[in-house]
Length: 389
Image (cartoon, rainbow, N blue to C red; front, side, top):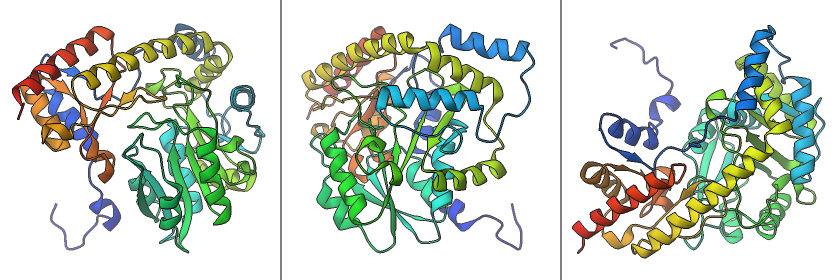
């Protein structure tokens, strides 16, 4: 496109395309690929949830809802959070139903950031966090988690704070590492937020998928509800990625600011998806339990298999990813992922797309059948044998 003016925003022009998408594109034209790259459940949305959406269409519920979402759904979200995570929100003024958790993060950042405000982004992290900070006019400041279990060091967080710092962004359980922060670790981050008067944007989209201990929400930590923006949704725990349904909870002042952005940018989340979400919260827990049990068995298989192959792999506390080290191969993350795809038709995601601290690792999703996982491990074993130093 040749014009006299440069029409593209500098911010958008400088954004790098998603590293995850690049590998999906490479794999899409190949036959016989076993994919460990997809970050979504391999389960179909429970039938009763789908049925609720169909019924809403049959009954003619096809108009806009309130900007913040169906009040009945917001009330059910509030009940669900109180029952499961001991967090209490006013459904009328502190909860917004969004188009997925991604939009919730977007409106949160756009509501709090002025130009040059900084957000500490704990890495490795989901690929959208830093770009969304930039698109909101802020400056993302990566803070690298420790390689031993990928837990964030309080000292590193403190050292990264400047007068421009506005918020800390965390995800627990984490994408891509699966690391879950326990109550003590959350309390350490909370203490830093209080000391420096910071907000915490807490992405809790994988809260339903934890395996070894109970989940603690950042908003449940003493004194933190007033400075936490809680992000969650239905995509992961309820196997509803394609429905694009999430929510954001925050104190009224923050929530009503986010609602203004949501009103102008999105109007409301899809109506039929909201009725589906209502059914998921009311009657979907048994299905979630079954999915969680299956993921736990797969996690155990993948962790033990990678360690047996000599690719050091910590046992993640949640989500559906393992993050094995491939440093022993002498290959970079990109080299390992590309050569594994070309030679053995196994798709994984190079760890460096999740931040510099992800170099030397690859993300492997175990949201796949056990037969697919076994086949992938067989091919990876062959790949490693062919690349022995």
